[in-house]
Every structure is written in C-alpha cells, then in structure tokens.
Length: 275
Ligand SMILES: [Zn+2]
Image (cartoon, rainbow, N blue to C red):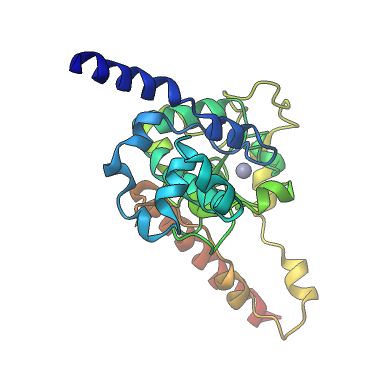
C-alpha cells in the first residue's frame, strides 16, 4: 500500500513537470538569445545557491518557472511574479550556459547564427555570441561579441538590446572558445560555420594593410589642438575575461598590439613636430 502511494507521487510529479513556463518564455518574441535550461539543473538546489538573495519572492518565482505554482497564489501575485520569474530564469541561465551541457546548447545556437552576424565588413558574416559587461543584474544590457575582430556590438533589435547582460555573463563567449578551440574564427578568409556567408570581397589582407596605413592627412586636418597621442591612448578596447581573469593568449596579443601602437604614436609625434 505504502509502496503504491510512493509510486503515485513520483509518477505524478514527473508528469506535472511539463516546463510550460520555460517553453512559453523561450518562444516569446525577443527571447531568441536564451537557450533552454534543463530541468535537472534548475531542480538541483546547489546550482541556485545565493539566488534567493537576488530575487524577490524567490520561492514562488522558482515554482512559477518550474510550473509548480499554486493556483491561489498565481492570481494574487501574478504580475510582479512574472518579472521576478524572468529575472530568476535569466540568472540561472547565466550559470547554465557556462556548464558543459549549457555550452553545447549555446553552440548550436551560435552555429545557426541565432545571435546575428558581425556588422564589420572584413569579418565576413562572422556569427556573434552574447556577452555581459558585468555579472550584476540591472547594470548593463547584453552586447554581442565577435570572435574574429574581438570587439563588441549592440544588438540590432531594441527587443534584444534591452535584455540584461547579466543573463549571459562576462565569461560565456570566452569560455566557449576555450572549450571549443577549433571554433576560434580565423583572422582572415571565410568563416567555416557560416551557412550563406557572403563571399570575400577582394583580398582582405591588402585591405587591412591599407587600413593600417597612418592617416596623416586626418591628423593634419585636425589642427594643433588635437594630439594624436591622446586620441590613440584614449581608444577603449574590450578585454575578454573568464571569471574575471584576462585570457592569457588574448592578453599577450593585446600587449603586443599596444606596443606596436605606442611605437606608431611616437613615430607620428615625431612627424607632427617636424611640421
Ligand atoms: Zn567582427
């Protein structure tokens, strides 16, 4: 008898768990960047450590996203609870996409270019990856990282542009390339992932060389008030980080690039003094 009751409870809870809220959330317009967080990840309390301090009505919000919310409560709190449930799902999502299974789900989306493609012409339609500028919610909206030019872009649509960057976190795209190093895009040539990628327009190497030529005319036109040094030094660069640490290879490359830049600036300064 007892055995039968236990059996009923277990089968009952299995069928009750239908992930309706999550499928509704994922299918809503504007939520295309999110992937599905698997049930057992959400149901493992360990994965949610500390989130009760970040989300108001945490228990009910968790019940809502796992479709276990009492019907009575649903009517009273429904409105505010939905906001809290989105926040909770977003924060769980940020933790999920840096797990092995989460990474592989996001990889599928990356391969389909669900996050869009780099607008920079020489990146040749490189698919982008979502990234946060901070891991703290309500601070910065989500940005898109291009693995080829190693720069950040704002999402094209305002729906995507208003998503909290903390739902993706600062680590995700860089961890993806660390775990799947074969996917690191080449610095030139067409993108391998790209289905329907535009063919390269001309030789990208010659174009790059042209672009790197110092623009002396612009410096002259700027007048005396503008110092090339201060302009070059003020140029902000994005520094990829995994769990707050700068990536070794990229950091090395950036130091090298900055040394080259500094030498170039010194050369331009000498030129400016001559005129
Ligand atoms: Zn790019």
